[in-house]
Image (cartoon, rainbow, N blue to C red; front, side):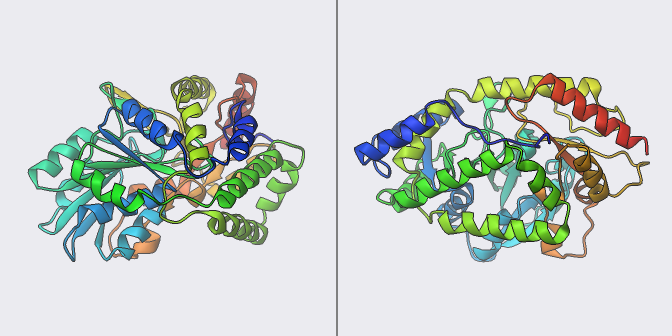
Length: 404
């Protein structure tokens, strides 16, 4: 079975874990500030604040903005559901905007019509590592006195005209979960050039550090997951995922175990910061390898598949490599996935990639592009060590299936 993703490691990981254990420096230590400084330099901003997760980072940004009651926040209709839930839990009104069929990010032409006098924030998501039209969004926001928050959970390393994503908005947030471009086994970072936002957030996190047991548990569980996915046992796992009931049960176990060990509103631990330092040095190199793999995909995949595009001056990364089934292909995406699974290819579909927020919002508006991508899009196998032979095999099987 060729999995759709693999967890990122580096050679010194186990040594670093035991070193920090021996020194009793799991939670607090010099690496936290060092990582934050290196990260801010990499993005090209004044400030970086580490947190326990990307979602915590987003919530902290919203709090720091001190928005008025009833403020309106605009979100793309195709993004992670927790962004919707956090915004709603903070008491803000949410307005969804459909996405651009070319890059799957918020549609700037529709965004203009969505702005009202209550709009205070636009969340500009760089979905799957493809930068959105952030310059136009910033310009539109400035004209209307609106704050832009960049969602960079997928886009670490991407840039527009040599300026990194995460350096455009009033504040931005990144995620470092185990499948992300940089993996610190949970965690996130806020970046900003705004001193006031920095001091408000930093004051909440100055003396807050994660529980060392939770950090180590997260690492152990993630390594066990990786071993499961990369051994013969993965055949049994993927077979189980073809059953709706078994898939629901496995998802319940997975999210339950991770939610129990996910820290609250705290800073990234010293150990995780050291892991971040090790991996930050490798981000650009890893992203280049993934782009080279996508070039092979583009060469061999059926040209009827719709693959998102990037604009001039945009250097994207591939957190996920997504394709959308052609309109004249009648098979349901779930049947398509099951067929590929039986042939040894694992693909992600629907909420395994990201969420259609219309399902949560339940408004009367239509989000046609989001609906199409959600219903007909799929995530192809892509990871740092995928071989050209594996890519060709995946492409050939996908192409053959499209003929039915």
